[in-house]
Image 1: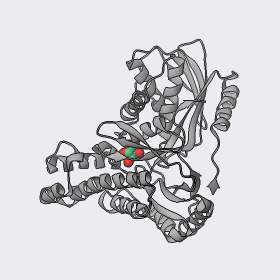
Image 2: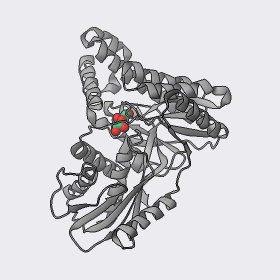
Image 3: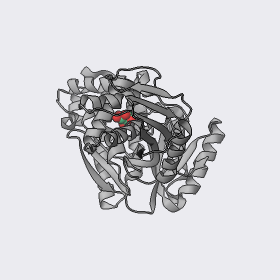
Length: 390
Ligand code: GLA
């Protein structure tokens, strides 16, 4: 199905209605934060690399109202209400999803903020398990809500690091900083180039209305807490040590070839991915800065193949979705396609001419459905605004 995106005001309204129906109160504030896709620079945020994500027009929205107690009562669509005692330092607890919230609360507690009790209802238009950072969107929306409740404004970077720590300590995913940075720093018409060595973001304009992005969720569920992500991280650490450098940014392909024998095949291929992906990302940034997109298709394809063959985080369905976009081709408006996010399932992105976007998305949908029997979810997006009060 080709889905249209709900606007932020529609989502905020939905959250307010949920709060009213769950707790019988009117909200005093609504916070929203977006999911993200990554244009290029995959699995290198934890390698001091460059990544180029954008916030998408899909959000988590939370409506809330203080409740004169020391308890947070929170509902989320399809889940039972949770109660969190705010007078205690938060620890991991059941249900599993509540840990994203507990982790963020813990972050505020560690900063010595005293949180007032509140009732809150969460709604979301970010598909779950689709590699679109629904968890970062939840963490960042919730952190934005808590900021307002304690009457403070954290810097975007501080908020992103706080959310990342929640993901590490409470959800058990040793993620890099890309998703939370994209969710807090997102801006309309801008890509976010993050130098993950310095944690400095730089906005790269994506303002040409004639280019759009199709997000295609293969519906093959992606779960980064099951080990593959952690293993890749360890392997890159091993590769770096064998290359004899402190940072991947100082490693060249010559260094990797020189260490090839010591590395063995698997670590060699992981290392080759890191070094070549950093280079491809820099080239894509140049393409956007110069407006010359002639090599963007091959850079995106190179990234996908490297993730498939060297980093081994793709899967048949992602490969198929990328192949389907390629099959439609440049003549019919496709500029490039690749898997996006952590992989092992999840979504692809297709960069395309806006006038062809709907037709391309429909063809990808129909061909994918015909070949796999799985109904994919596709939508078109442009870079969207980051976390804010709605
Ligand atoms: C997940 C992680 C990010 C990043 C990507 C892969 O989304 O949360 O930090 O490592 O995978 O690029």
